[in-house]
Amino acid sequence: MEHSDENIKFWMACETYKKIASQRSRISKAKKLYKIYIQPQSPREINIDSSTRENICRNIQEPTQTCFEEAQRIVYMHMERDSYPRFLKSEMYQKLLKTMQSSSNS
Image (cartoon, rainbow, N blue to C red; front, top):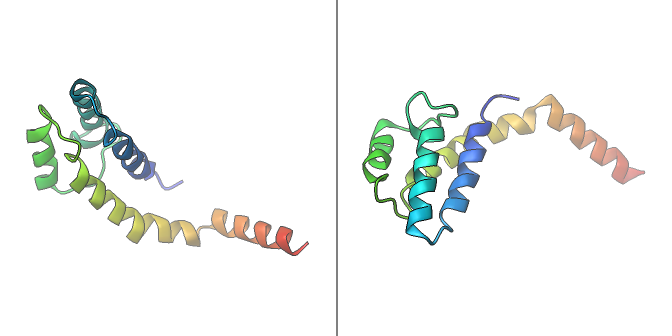
């Protein structure tokens, strides 16, 4: 609802990426993640600092399993400090909570 779904999608994509064993598959997936989430003006650009973005850009030709780790940490911090607390206060979540509480009391 707040247009920050790119954060959770990036975080989950990184978790999948870290499990890739094949170097060829890792390169392909790393370039895809870069184009979707890291590259400036990309469709789902995440909010990370320029030095983290530059490090990823430098390492993208020979990506390691951990090359997105810093960006993933930053995105997690954004979700923890911003998105999740707002979600807990949202009208949608509050309605769901009331529904769950009333059905458990029945």
